[in-house]
Image (cartoon, rainbow, N blue to C red):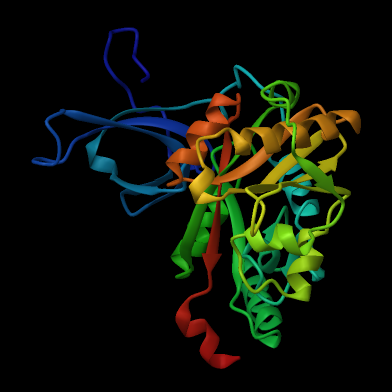
Length: 335
């Protein structure tokens, strides 16, 4: 908190600081907590009618009455990373997009509208990396029309918690009734340590997802569209550990310059805790190292405690959170 020369806490933020990352202290609500003060760090997304809205790294929006503020200051837009590769949000967003390509896409200014017959939100959502070239309400109307023509709900993928992320856009979407349905995190780490974790013996690598690999993949009824998405990316590898009726474990890796991505790492429930997921990722990591990659990223759900523990043990750490906002229900009635 900001402390004056006289030792008093001071509020050193104003409405002019909307869009900046701030740290504030406010009086706690009576009966809610035993603590007298509550601290909040995040991006100040609005300051209207005596109420501040602050978006935390997780994407959660906190409402704070101006009258309860006792201290506040602008803080650096993102904390410095103490380990792992350095990367901007935009770099990671573009790399992630190339690793999971839609079947159809169209530009709206600096927004990319993506569709793949509904197979995963990532391939069926807008990636907004800049100005759409239209006022926001017009851009959102164009987005709804585009997805409506394809019989799909309109989703917009946003991010929070790092320099250059989209807290302001999240706040504007929420004001217009868009609903945040899914939140996950993108984690990054060094690639070489993953390759050193296990020998990876018994792991089979292939350029294609064969029937056996698909038998273990959790998304059942995979269509031709899904196969196109799974096979998309600059350099795609599929890994499997042979089993009886289906592989004991599988994984997917996309190599793109210095980056290698891991996804679809799945293990037969009856064979978990045997190190198979680690073996799969180690084998894929070694192949990615051979192709010149040095850094790795993956996406993990916020409530998947097992996966988060596994990846943290491999040296991965969260870089930013990402979210999928769905259009308001009433918006679909005028298509």
